[in-house]
Image (tube, rainbow, N blue to C red):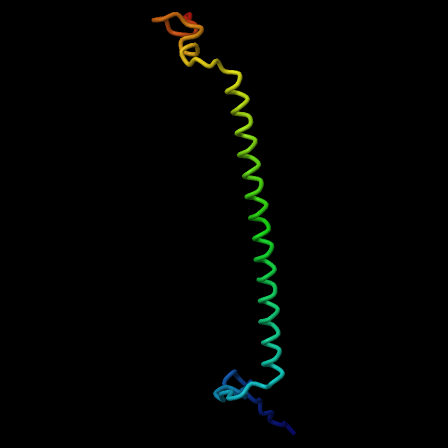
Amino acid sequence: MNRIRRVMPPRGLAQIPTRRGGERESVPAHKAYLRISFLELERARHAQEIRTGRARIAALLARSNEIEAEKAQILNMVRALLPADPSDRIGRGAEPGRPRGGRFRYAY
């Protein structure tokens, strides 16, 4: 008694029933409220990032002003040390017509 077995072909993707093609005309209320909640959380997060960014910019500007003040103070100290007559600074340390520095001779 040989029984013949019928083998069913495997079902493919085309045979799987889906909900494709049916347009959703209405969104359930709980999903709409959940989406609104997510949007509000995102907006709150962005507002916090904006506040943090503004605080960083204010700190950077304050430091930039401190740097400018310190630079001006140092320049004023250097100007106080320099002679008042600019002609005193020109040509100091060198004879007229002679270049500054030494002369190098290389042995071959």
